[in-house]
Image (cartoon, rainbow, N blue to C red; front, top):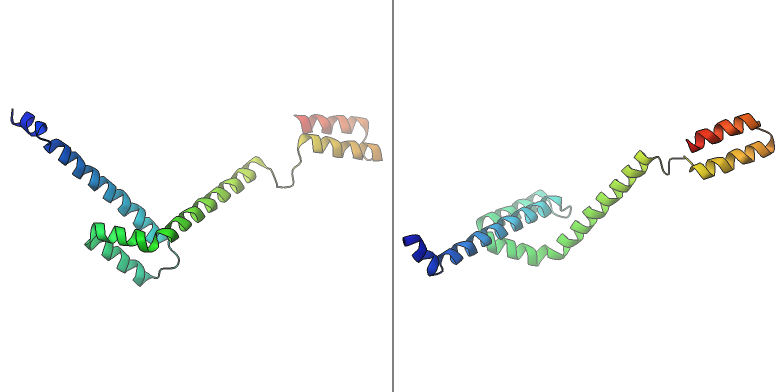
Length: 135
């Protein structure tokens, strides 16, 4: 009966609110710590001061950090995403073989046709190379 009385007067909603506030604080804490350590313009002393400020005065430290370094935080995040996207594109090209001097099958057949027209390749060699390019 006591539990039902607490739910009825709104204590459950207050508890949910405080749990929500803790989750938000924890998420912001992780985000800000990641930004502090990723930042190239802060030295070790500056990073230490920001970490101590955020830990000792949790909400105030987070809000001051967001106000003071929020724009740079967004720029560093975009820069990190662009670097990751570029690294992924380079990896995909290296695995797929594109851009590494390899030709598409159509380009390879055109090149083989030129060699055949010049007399470098015989009909049998051209057919074998063409089958290899297509297969």
